Length: 166
Image (tube, rainbow, N blue to C red; front, side, top):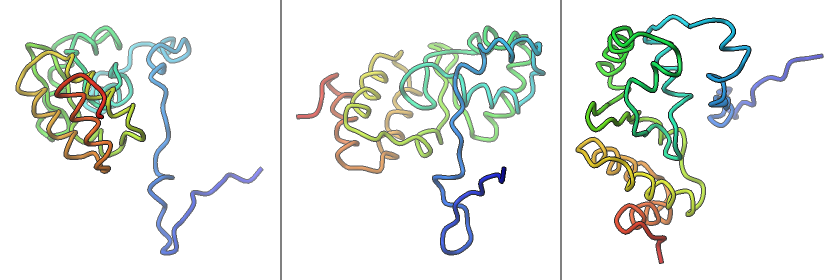
């Protein structure tokens, strides 16, 4: 059996749609995975956990704190704080400690909404998250990062009113 090769564009580069694989959020609850033991707490594994485990419909934005990672992976608070500091210093994550909110600013670039209902759901979900400066910053950034005018309008309407765009 011959392995498949990634599709290439006319210039020999891998097409963007072939660069990424979907990873199930269930990874962290999988019996085989958890049976391997507690993974080491490093910036690498914390980053992987953030990319693949944040709950909710909005890519990269969730009303959770480090307790989410502690429960998920069995790490110690000091380990997680040190690893998160490295990731924060690199600009890959922003967080509010109280109220708890974690945001991965680049997530929406890689996970655009595909239909108005999805954009509406994102706006409604953010509207229900704890009010803080980080939520406002994230909402503004996500709105500006949405590529489609119609989807951006649906997102903003839901964020402002909790309703679908007319």
